[in-house]
Length: 318
Image (cartoon, rainbow, N blue to C red; front, side, top):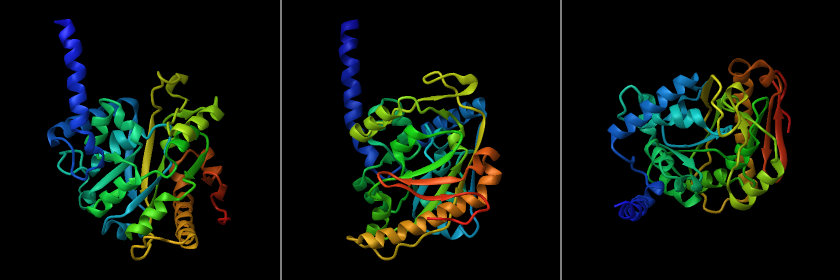
């Protein structure tokens, strides 16, 4: 009997994985609402146990951003975006009583996640339920074409590895893929900032060189961090933190442009930088620990170094 089960269970798991493999690229909500509600409620209670809270705010004049689908460019990533997955993403799935935020129903929001995450049983199902889809370019374009608002984190695993609780640095890809996808599809960009995400866990710089090499070579993030009571990974528990997700102003990119020039991409990128910096300057003093806010925000383009650095009450500088 045990031998039969040992053969049957892996076979059933393989069939399940194969039958649901395409879900990470697909637009429709995955799984029954009842299952999604149960998962969302469990995540909400777990976050409450750890003292994690999550709020969504619209920046001044940002209401226009919610009139049609857009690409939400979210920073920072944090060691793990626990509050966004545990609390935030569920609010964008319609039909979850006591969970859904009706302001965002019409956005049809989906969240881009690293491909490797969909190879981990149970985690992949949780991500699919709360609206996370594969972050590959073709997958994102398909979602946009079907009318979805797509949330991306331009720093991805690189930022995940380098996250620190005592300072704010936002990373963007070397090739500015999020800008190119926006221009190719004619979809507006909306910078967003998740204030407090970096403070949920305390990232470590230990073995940073090898971990960045692994991130670059294999596209796998290996974050090291501590949490409450100084407990290290994998025993780290989140610190009590209020995370506030602030939605910025819409950046128009014009009509679809299948082959934007480098100067055109750079022009949109500069608009993105200016809006991200505005978000930080206007909100950091009230939404971040004072010592963290005072250090300002650095924005680094991977492979190019720091491209913008701002401090509260100072003028932006390139």
